Image (cartoon, rainbow over all chains, first blue to last red; front, side, top):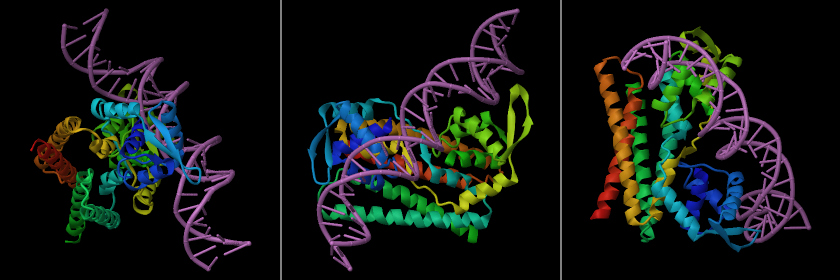
Length: 169
Length: 169
DNA sequence: ACTTTACATGTCAAATACGACATGTCAAGC
DNA sequence: GCTTGACATGTCGTATTTGACATGTAAAGT
C-alpha cells in the first residue's frame, strides 16, 4: 500500500511527470522506498482513476504532468497521521550486517571495507546537498531530514571504522 | 533473492525449525528483513531440494529441524563476500519521515511524538539485550551489532526530540 | 546526415510477498 | 474431562515487485 502514498506524497511536493518521479525514487527516496518506472506508470493511472491526482499538463516528448487533488491531499494526510505505521523494514544491507559474524576475519574485513567505502560516498553526497541548501538561503523544509541522514551515516561510518581497527589491533 | 540467504544465514548460526525461524524473523531480524511463516516453510523446502540445507531431526509436534550443509555454507559465504549488495531499502517509516514536512505543525508534532515513543521502546529493548549479554559473560559475537542498533536509535531519538522542542520554542 | 544519449511512457510474464484458511500436537489450568 | 494457548506446518488466492521487452521523441555531438 505504501507505493501509492509514496507517489501521492511526491506529487504533494510538486506536480511531476512519471519520469521525474522515477528519478526522485532513485535519488532521494532510494534509502526509504524503491520503485521502478514499471510500477510508477500503472500506479499513476490508478491514482488518477481514484481521483487522488489529475493531469495538469502535457509537454514535449509525450510527457504527462500530474498534480495532487484536494481529495488526494486529504487522503495523504489521513494516512500520515491516522494510519498505524508498518515498522517492518526490508534492507539487504541490514541483513548482511546481521550475518557478518558468520564470516572468518579476512572475509569480514573485506565486507566492512566495501560497506565503509559506500557509506563515505553517501555521506559526501549528503554533505554536498546540505552545503547547496545553505548557499541558496532558501529555508528548505527538508533540511532536518538531510541532517538526520548525515547523522545516521556518521554513526555507521564510525562503527565500521571501529570494527576494522579492532580487528587489525 | 534475499529471503533465501536470510534463512540460510539463520541456519548457519544454529539448526532450527521453521517455527523458530519465524520467531527470529519477528524478533531479531524485523528491522532488517521481514518474512512470515507462509514464506518460510516453502523456502525451506526449496533450500532442501537445492541441497543447501538438510533435515537433521524431527521432534515433538511434527517439528522438523533443518541444518545448513557444506554446500549451503559455501553458497552463503559466496553471497556475503562476492555478490554485489543491493543497497535499496524498503522502510515505510523512512517514507513517512521523508513526507513529514508536508504536514501542518500540529499534525507533524503528533507523528513525531508517536515515532519518539516507538524509538524509546526499541532503545530500551536493545539496552536490556546488551545488559543480558554483559551478564552472561559469554563473548557474544553479535554484540557489536547490538551496539550499532543502540547508536542508530539514539541518533533517531535525539533528532525527534530536537524537532519537537524546536517547534514548541 | 548519422549516431548516441537522455527523455518519456507503456506492457507483460515471472518471481516474491501477504493474509487468510486449514490442520494437527501437546502441556497446563480448571 | 475440557478448554485454552502455545507449538508447529502447511496451502492458496491475491497483490506487489521485478526485469525484460517495446516504442517513440528530441537534443547534442560528430
